Image (cartoon, rainbow, N blue to C red; front, top):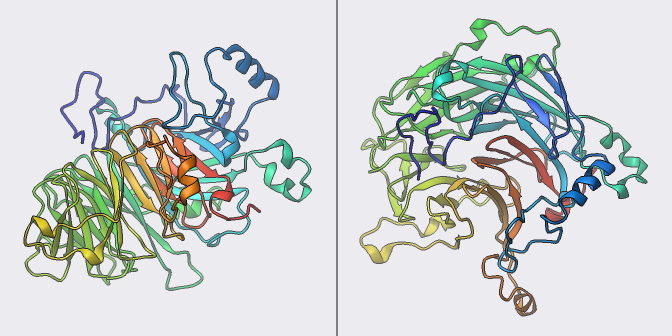
Amino acid sequence: MSKRTADGDNGDAPLKRGGRPEPMDLDDNQEMGEFEDEFEDEFESEDEIFEAGVDGRPDAEREAEERAGAMDVDNGTFIVGRNKLEAGQHLAPDVGTYDMLHSLSTPWPCLSFDIVRDGLGDQREKVYPATMYTVAGTQADSTHQKENQLMVMKFSGLSKIERQEDDSDSDDDDDEVSDPILESKSIPLTSTTNRIRAHRMPAQDPSRPPTTFTATMTESSQVFIHDITPHLASFDTPGTVITPQQNKPLSTIRAHKSEGYALDWSPLVPGGKLLTGDNDGLIYATTRTDGGGWVTDTRAFQGHTGSVEEIQWSPQEASVFASASSDGTVRVWDVRSKSRKPALTVQVSNTDVNVMSWSRLTTHLLATGADDGVWGVWDLRQWKPQTGASDKPSPIASFAYHRDQITSIEWHPTDDSMVAVAAGDNKVTLWDLSVELDDEESKDTAGVQDMPPQLLFEHIVEHAKEVHWHPQIPGTLVVTGSEFSVWRPIPVVYGVPTK
């Protein structure tokens, strides 16, 4: 895994989970961010609200470019394991496989983000036009540290891709007319963001909105906790002004002596309980008090011999969490332990274990992704205290499809057989672990050794770093890298009708 090194002349130092993408070329007066379609439609911006057309270009323009590049592009379907790119050829996305596809650029790359749950409904039957809320932290280069910020964003008007066969469907007309809009609020930060996570605390008073906290781990080794509730509310209250006091952190965690990337809020402690892990292999717990303050336990959890790359709370046991490390292990802990030592340790890779995801539906399943491009699924019921090499458990599924380090992995929120994976080879892949081929299907796939049958979909994002399923919009994903990509494959992949 690439670790952060001393800044070079260009100020773009490599980061964990891959190198920092090149900064965008921006005019001096360019605002916070901008939507752009996959095919570089022009757009206009005003203040912090941006509009752009849906994906796609006029037919004449697209046809002209296709004719000009006909000698360089193979317009057929590329099948991994069967086809090879010849000199001068390149791959282009098949927009026909997407139900929605939008892109978003920000002043500086945001290599970590989180989706904020909203009050618009779970498992929304009417998908389009879609609205979602996100938080992200920027990664400005070393010469522009003062430009870093925590970005609170609202995406709205996210429409499905318009197809010719949809023109006759008058029932869907309302879904096709909106333009995507980005609204954003920024909170100044003094350092680049390594990892950010949001936590929504239910309101005790039904007349008041839920409180939303963010925790931001920075390159400075400090962790900032902010209340972004007023920033989210301002999107729906025109004219609202965010005060400097509302931009200040509620708490700053200074327990870490080195920077870190591991961060997770407990899903079972509504008031707020946070775990943070650093490059020294130390993990600290921070809890919100009854009075609304924040207290960090100075007794660190210790056991890893390398940096802590990922932390995940158990979705079922409020006192249990797991951590993944560059030492190749995953360790399971109990916060009630006085020894602050792990209860279980399993060597899951000979390389760094970069990322991890604990299934919220089948809570004995844990997915891990490593520096060698391999990701796997583990049955925690098979994990026991080890007494020898022969006791090492094996994954119940393992895939070596990606050609670079795994940078993100996440279980589908409502389907315990589906997993999204992002990697340093610029690919985001969707997998269905329930797929098994019968004899006839096995014959059809002969010679496609590099294409596992469980692979459902492949999405290309330059410098793909972090991917999340939207927990309330079925089949919709957001991924960040050189830019944000908001997308939804055709619903047939999930068996979810588009309305």
